[in-house]
Length: 81
Image (cartoon, rainbow, N blue to C red; front, side, top):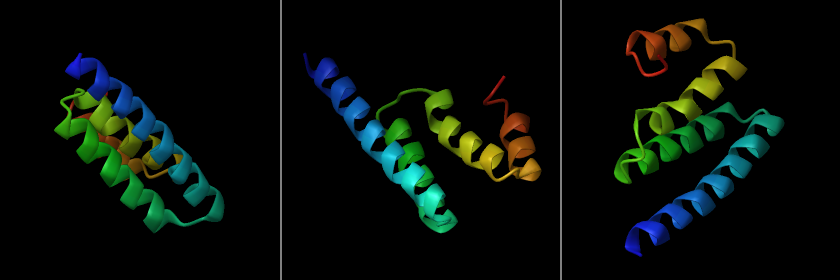
């Protein structure tokens, strides 16, 4: 039961943070988007959701911003393989 509550809470928080992230990107507020990505990464790490869940928001931001250096950093760490 506690695992189900945590998983459901994780999904709800993910949905909310993703919405804030999308709004920040639409407004061109990259700093706010980066802040949200940091929160998503921390939350995934805290709840042990796995490396992919930790890195995927960062990957999305790097791809959206066409930040090749950040994409290469993520790939060199082996997270997205």
